[in-house]
Length: 484
Ligand code: NAD
Image 1 (cartoon, rainbow, N blue to C red):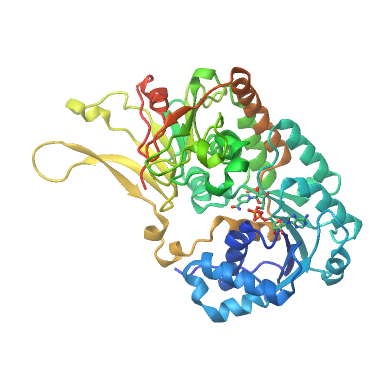
Image 2 (tube, rainbow, N blue to C red):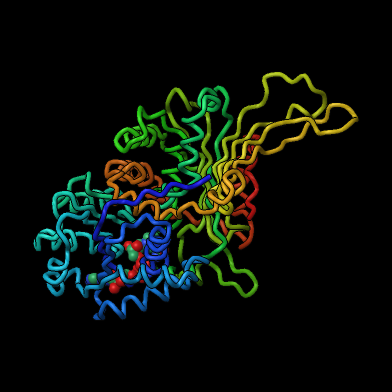
């Protein structure tokens, strides 16, 4: 199989915050991979912009280091790497001042796509948007890319949307959620809407429940200050987990395109029921031997912030009434493991004896590690000795199913950046979606604050607090294992 890489249009991509962690670790290594794959046209340019004074050559040195460190095996291709670095330029600019803007205006080329990646703190979105306009740098077709966190509640998200809307149309704004750029997430849509097999079963007649788990092994480490004001609900649930939930639960869009997909996702958020207090478990990791506790790492001995959360959510519509959606995410858990599991109902009747009836079909969509989709089906254990049933996965892991092509799937960031250049917003969040998601999470967070809710302690390396296990146990269900 030969993979088809279609080059995008020529572009000038300006990365504000071009010297920052995200730019060095994700954005530029991702762009390099697209360059190597032949997707970046020869006259595409990437312009780093940040406060530090330096010239293009010093910036190239900085980015070379970043790509060598974070770019994986491909960064050893030094010929490509040097050719890619020649596509880079740098402008020293202060988002809140006047220096550098005229220079940037002078080097932008007419007739190519203009994209501006705001890889900076959200407090700088407004000043950047305003200056891009003031200096005539953003044309009518220019695109801006903004990072999470998009607000910390409904009010701040609304304010951010209004700030951006003062200078850009919604069609120009790309709110990134890198979970949507993952190959498996898109494959989920291909599997759901490209086969006749699944959609008839995708409802409360056949689905018992759905689990969405995003487990990390790392703690808050250097990000403690930021994280302590945020917590798992704001940092992970309001964006990544809710986006996954929307894609799993949405009605089939009439076409795979931005407006149709985003309309359907929004309907799911609107249909989410308010969550009862006893359907939520918050946790905070404890100390472990030499390992610091959450409170020590966050530098806040009285912190009530959750580093783990489990939620039993419900969607009030005909398709999903009565089907629980269990969401769970946390830090310092047993393994780095992200999965969406669609657990189908028991057979209405079994013709087999003993505990054979307990076999269930599960569709497991793994985001990490080892992206892929498994459909667990019941088969007969081979050999003599009667009818013994076992569950085995039909494996759709990309590297196995697609051979060499499967190994070369683009990482989420690089795919999404190419979508920005192509002007395709399907995998980005629309302003009203983000606001609706906050409107669902805000009352939950307000409830904790009112009650001074104290998260349950859990051991690092575990699956979270025992209460989270009980959330399912008391309904006769169990979480899927967190395993690497
Ligand atoms: P960082 O602190 O490493 O980098 C910030 C960048 O902004 C630097 O290049 C800095 O020079 C520039 N900057 C700061 N003030 C400026 C000003 N007044 N004018 C011009 N440039 C200025 O931050 P980061 O980790 O790269 O994160 C950038 C944004 O992306 C943040 O909003 C963060 O929340 C978000 N984000 C980061 C990650 C990540 O993995 N690092 C993941 C998701 C979202």
